[in-house]
Image (cartoon, rainbow, N blue to C red; front, top):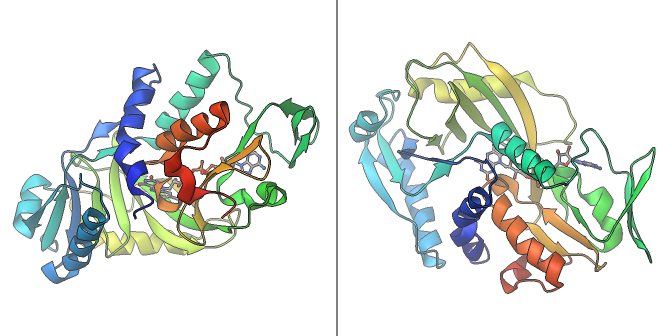
Length: 307
Ligand SMILES: Cc1cc2nc3c(=O)[nH]c(=O)nc-3n(C[C@H](O)[C@H](O)[C@H](O)COP(=O)(O)OP(=O)(O)OC[C@H]3O[C@@H](n4cnc5c(N)ncnc54)[C@H](O)[C@@H]3O)c2cc1C
């Protein structure tokens, strides 16, 4: 946690910097953001974690405790199976496909190129620059950042990166709702979160360790549905669309890999596990300094890809 604190504290301002820089990547303020439990006893684990985060030096952890009734008054979509809650303040959420689409559009608008459907087979350093093998052709660059998530080991191993990155796979789908919640609802015991996604509600959960390209396992979707069904009213969990499985890049020691490799021109940004969206912009901001100035910011030291 101590290593994460400086990143967490700048995470939201990095989203604002993107917006101020003209990227149309929108974040929504969660009003409210609730973590929900059957009982007060179940809730005690999260309260201890939040206290531990404060103890590790992160000052802006603002939250309040709610009874089940208070939680339902804030979010009528909750059933009476909810017996206790935590309201977290200052939280935001986003629409992932729209957000990433806005980033790509901004790169293109600034004269950058986004090659879709191109796989990099290898990265190698030459005296003239870093060469990417795309199969049918090669490209040469002054510097390269490998940000290939759960697939990163194959490209980074030759540059001295030994920390393993595995796929911690999560499942999601969207469903219609009678009344959209005002922000994300998180069910920590069930390991499921639901988030407004346009006019549908996105339901996401599960942590499955399998190879990143393995097919979607429908039983996992059923397990997510069964886990969350008792807590939600006016949500049609059987009218599912957008069923999806995706790979969180999870490192062995729980810290991301951000920084230079054994090559001065090859960098890594990845391995953020469950936090790659929240910490993506701040990672990019800090890593840009390392690439452009050749000096790694002090706060990135714990994430040294060569550890
Ligand atoms: C269900 C679920 C819920 C989540 N919820 C949250 C959340 O609430 N908050 C949060 O912060 N994070 C969340 N995450 C985690 C977040 O999605 C990840 O941490 C993040 O996507 C990691 O970003 P990345 O760019 O490192 O890797 P990825 O998003 O995996 O992107 C890597 C990309 O590299 C491409 N690629 C791989 N190999 C090659 C190659 N050889 N050549 C070219 N391209 C290649 C892949 O196709 C992929 O597009 C969630 C994840 C899941 C699955």
